[in-house]
Length: 60
Image (cartoon, rainbow, N blue to C red):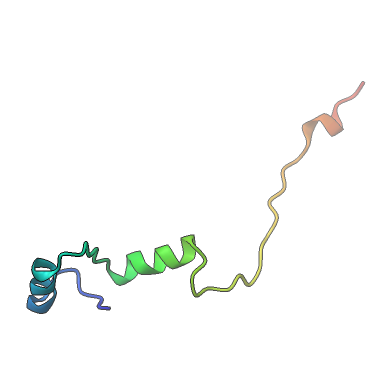
């Protein structure tokens, strides 16, 4: 894993030599996948968002 945005010579050679599909992602993309798919992360808390129910305040 690297934070580099461009491929090094070793990675380029590995991609060319492999018959298996290899997808390279940077650290930011890896972190986003981890959050999206709950891999290696623990939920600490949630919060509730509320809105005012305008019907409650209507006069009949």
